[in-house]
Length: 148
Image 1 (cartoon, one colour):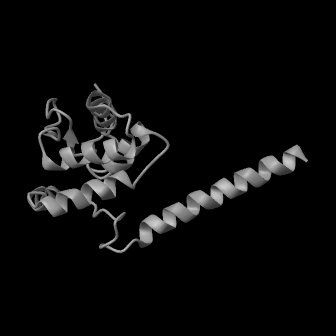
Image 2: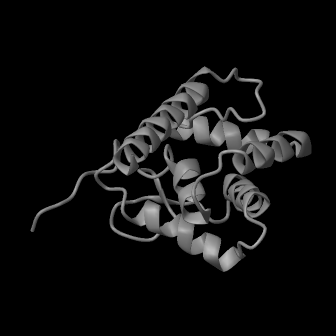
C-alpha cells in the first residue's frame, strides 16, 4: 500500500508541474502573471523605459510576485531566467556584463519578491539575485566557460 501511495504522489506532482508549465506558456500578454521575456538588450531597454510609468511598474511588481517558487531564491531564479547571461548585480567582472542593481527592472524584481515573501530582506534578495547571475556563463548568450 505504501509503495502505491509513493508512486501516486510522484505521478500527481509530475502532472502538477506539467500543468504549471503549460499555464505559464499559455498566459496572454495582458495577464497579471505573464511577463514578457527580455531576450535582447533592446527588450531590456524598452522594459526599463516603460517602467517610468507608475502603473507599468506596479503591474510588473504584481506579475513578479505571482511567479512564486519554493522559496525566495527559487522565485529570484525564475524571474531572472532571461536576464542571467547579460547581467550581474554590480556590472563588474571580465565578461562585460551590465549592472542590474541600479535599474528599474531590479527595483521591480526586489519589490515583487518582497511581495511574494514578506520575510525577505533586501540583503537576502541581493544574494538570491547575484548567485544565479554569477553562475550563468553556460546559459545562452553567457559566453561559455573559458578553459585556461
